[in-house]
Length: 327
Image 1 (cartoon, rainbow, N blue to C red):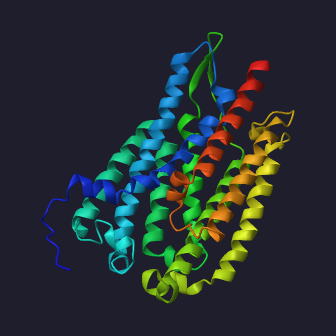
Image 2 (tube, rainbow, N blue to C red):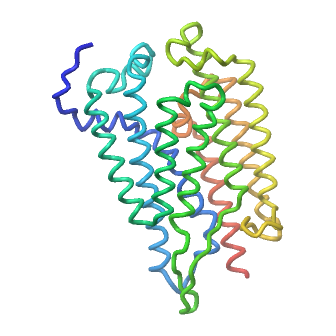
Image 3 (cartoon, helix red, strand yellow):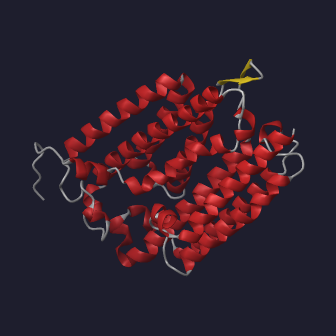
């Protein structure tokens, strides 16, 4: 395919290549904000609370830019393989609407903007953003070709999003009764464990669906698929799904851990049914509906799962707020 490298790509092509539907995954940056509402809520300082929320959404914007840049880099590396994929061949880089030089230039501009924003928030945020970028670049060039490490690298990106969400609002100043307090929002290690396992669960399901759909052509579309089989992935998915549910259950009543930030009356256990349903619903969609290659589309299109996530967020944050108000 002959591509005019001097042609300026259209705004529509740039937006499409950024994969706006997949940006829903960056919502994980806001989870620490929701699950520490009982710590930073103060009826005496609405301006302080607004500043904390603003910092959280600034972190979200940073990771939107970083993840978009990663898509430009990854699709540039995989351009030849994407051109023989039934769906990926329509992506702007694979279709020739964005040349490789332009793709790298756009990615660089996004990275510079994201890292500048991260540094403006804090040095730890900048380091987290760099770690996320480095992991994903390593994935694009190397890790995606190593069995098991490929899905673990994907999962690490989700953990770093959660870390960034915590760092963004940590050490913020909030007034309680006119007295300024510096927030110490050290997040429970359980949150990171659950995030890592949940992300690994989704990544394995994605590999399974890719392998199932591609069939004999799987290696040509993604070489790492030659290292997997559907039975192996099913076993791994079952192990990780079980571990995810158990870890979250333990988190909800881990009152012996100071950083857990859960009520001592174990009321956070009210959220367990939502996580259990979410895991089982995803398994149903994988095995019965044959989806999983595009997790972001599942979250957008599957209304029961979307409603379940919403109810989980509302229930969890409400439990924490109720504990804050009564105490």
